[in-house]
Image (tube, helix red, strand yellow):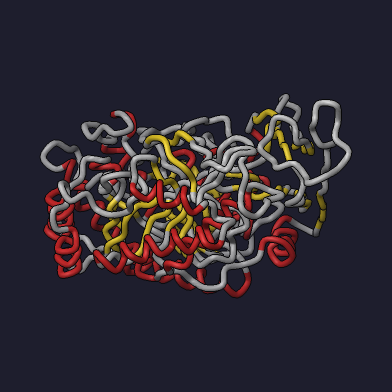
Length: 541
């Protein structure tokens, strides 16, 4: 267990087939073979053994790379973005010699060993992030509108949310609002009165956040300002910004190792917050693959992951509403970490089957405040910027049901988009689960969020937490716990109206919240019927 977020997320990771590559965060949307946006040098086995890679080693890793059932580590600077040491005996090709440091430990069982690693290595969050985000849904413009947003569509979206009697924690204005990427200000053509729009949204009861990245595109007025002041990561042996191509053009990356650059970046966002009345931000990107080749930073980094860490720490200045997607050594930050964009499919290609495994991976890596991204996925099947595709109705409902038991619910594709041409009452089902989350589930989430601050234990837990030596619990990838109090067994297979549920804990008794009956732990409920509008969940008696 552990390692990293991955394109085809599995739990446990035994079934991965990842060949040897450098072990740094990457945008798996652009390259599904990369390790993903959030990772740690931490692996945990069902036998109670743990492996920890030292942060200073130029680490490469493979997982079942040759189908041999092994995790293999290698230290090497060759063909990797690890900065070279300042001095040393290099080989004839000008590459430093390999270096690899790691630690192992073992305990009586997997839970005990993990608790030790949390205490000695991972750490725990300093506080619980924004509680309103935990209790009420986030509404994002992205999956529904992509970049085709303007003042009218944003206000119309907000009115639809209220007209359909849904609560909210905030409305997140995603990509498409800027004139140039890196301005962080509203395009006056698309948003002729952005400050007035925000005031109107707040009068409706919404808080407002906007989407930002660490990139400043070359056509932004901020580019010359940042370049003249030396605020961007530079190209190798040059004094000019190292340009990179990201998914929205060509730009430079703010050098987060430079304290003045960080202050400049923060000041720009504070100006946005003050000018428009914005509450906070969604911080996108931050992965190492977006650093220029053989980059040069103001302060040397022995591990490029330091960039991700500094970006997250800079983002965290904007409070508990912050969401990030890239993580390394960020466990102490009281912010939400968002899963990388999911696709609107049922399978392991960033689809619904990866939702629970990704949440469990975040949890075991020490990130308890999980934001599962958009209900129903991002509808990229209609094109990256396409808005005509709508996830199939059954998929949307089953995705909704899982997310209702996660720390945060986030809508974008709207339930009422299915009205008039649907088999089921998607609006009614969605409203039911949003209400269930707000009135019942979020109480459990908040309780265990505070426990995470005290002890480092995750909020969303694998069921082996209650049965650390049970084969069924150790191999289950479609059930999870909220703390040690709630068991959730969602339906994640297309067309399924029943499933087998493993109820953990031979000495425990559970209440079936669908039937009200008591169920003994340590056994199976076979062919458990699950209509489309239901999800099996149980609370400990």
